Image (cartoon, rainbow, N blue to C red; front, side):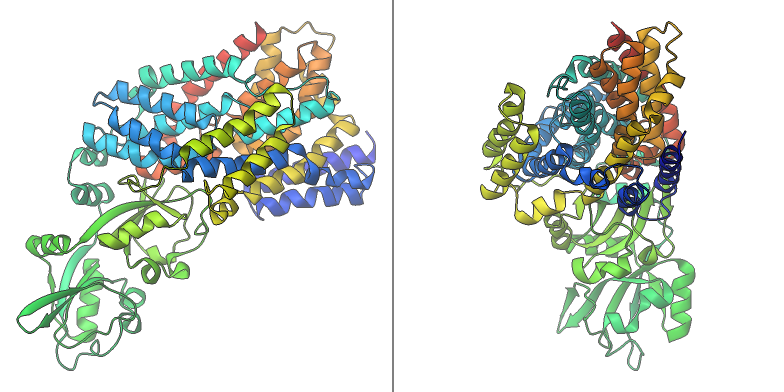
Length: 602
């Protein structure tokens, strides 16, 4: 091998290590790749290293992001969620089947993560109505969204990339059609749904905390689900107290004592007035502060200020709830600006007027230093405060409520959104124009017709994924130009051996699944494109089928929670741990792998 081949290998290895370790931002790693390849002359000419910026898959994917946001914001997805609530029933197996089928269908035309975000509240409503543990329904929901990625060209990022790369490598001779994925994708989805309904739900653990989800009272369900070690106390601000004549922010009970003020009761004449807590609220002599925290923190506060603190009675708790104070479970949206930031950084209490009592992450409860804990995708927050403030969360795109679905969402633009979706899909199917053109045009019309707001469209475009594709496209070119892709294909599929098609497709599926799980499915699709093309040529299988094997492998992300966004999103509300995904997802992965290899080999 020449020096350029070794540079390509070194670039690939370093990039994969950084993708897995996340030592630096993923997009920074990706955009460094074309720079290295251009400077070293590994990709020639140097301008070819920038080919990713004009890649059809990048343009099409940007349009698809906006179309997906339009389907959600216009109410198309909400209508399906309402239908799910209305016809869900109360039998566990029938619920699992209905949830998975509906989610799988919607995921074929929307992004996987957006589909889960829409259906999460509806599924939690169903679990309460049917008195079924949320953990029994959350994993089927997430897995169905991933299975939906096997149905169409636009259903997931790797599909788009592989379709674009196949057309380029074959010189336009071979293309992947919009619904060509469904020929094998439908049987894969059917088998995957059957596995979950018959076997998978039997493997999902029933924890003691799960049984509390059967209770109809949402406040009790939240408290029992999180098992907070904190209590509600009350203290009366006496004359001369250091707390008097200071604002909530100035006394800083949260920073000093890990204590949250959740409500203030103030006497006005003969009446007791309950006042919502805001950072600028001035504490007065005679105020009764209802505070929430641990025993030791409350005792520390009592000693420091020489004031008696009492445990609030159940009647007083109910009185607060009767004053419009409530609990709610809130999750972080996949593309939220809150990710990797703390509640203190976000001034969460000041912006929303809500207290965060705990964070549920990966089956574990975080109660200590909640305000200083960076938020991660899949986190579920237990918030406490005025009901009207909880409802305001529904207007924020960075968060979504898990306890109910938005009933007030405007669905008048839903027919227009569906027409624009058809306008994006039909022209490439009929051969009138490329998907990149029709998707971009429909995305612009989505904004122009009000199906999605300009802000919503901007937030929907995931620059991290786009930069990842832009950066890794020249790496695929380098593997092809230096002959490394052919050598790797020759190693996996020796020409002197008579290999059956089942082995070829199975091996491509396995390598794609492994690479996607450990790094990123978009990067895996780009890197394996030239390998799949060379493997098809050396083994004599249809090149389109080889690319489909890679696509289906990229969607096989069931075994680990961090392997896919959908897994992370359901982790908090389902109360899962990594071992739950391993136990249930391993069987589903084997079933999907065998089904894929057999059907492609026929």
